[in-house]
Length: 326
Image 1 (spheres, helix red, strand yellow):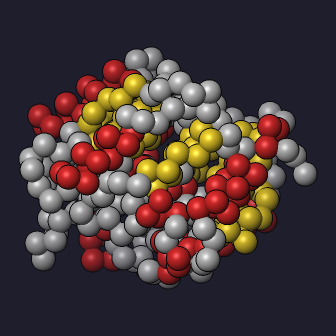
Image 2 (spheres, rainbow, N blue to C red):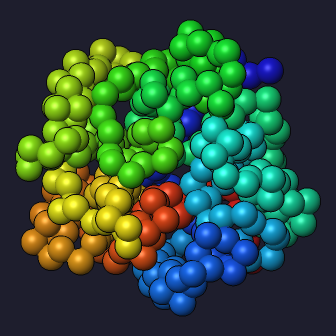
């Protein structure tokens, strides 16, 4: 078994082979708005194809839902070679059906057409891709509310989970974010809705200055982020993202729209937009300050947010060496 020093979870901005998406269909919660969300997925796929990456569309194995960020393979580099880890997915603590989604990686691997890297079973641990964030240099950021939620890994405490993240993902330091919430989020506080790493020691985080119900919690989050240091004990530089103006569903419930749910690719960053041009552009400009060598491309995600997810939730990047040449 490789030691922790042999294993590293790459940052999202490191070289990639491609991006996975799971196509919406009538058997998912998208049935009532299938045309609308299909248009959104077509726009998303066109944006992905503008990069030099492959697009792996999952539409040939059964799926329960389309949030592939949370059941797609989590790829580590072990002795420099990619290994795809297949963690257990139970739909954010057994909130929804998940049996098909939990089998997607194994079914794709069994087909033998797609993955160049080996797929390794980690079904003894529940872990969602949206719940972890890596700076690529040994630091992994998570939220305590999500990873300590008992319907995921039962009685595992913070120390046990941290030990597993160090062993399986090669973390040298785990940053536990204890504050932060987006109304309408049903993931128990995924880190990719709140705070994201960027190159050169940057953390992009969301902030709300409209004095809504989220403001005190996000203020505490900002204060805690200001105390974080890397595995090498270097403080991070913080860049603040706005929150979109409130978006509500047909019943008046607030939806968890956030600009932190962006996807980093080889040559571009895809940023979710919500039909709010000034705020959308402000968020894209700030993300551009963190990713100066990449194009910043907006993708309208108003359809995605209707089912409480956004752009990053709907995608999973595949690091260099994971896909077969086709």
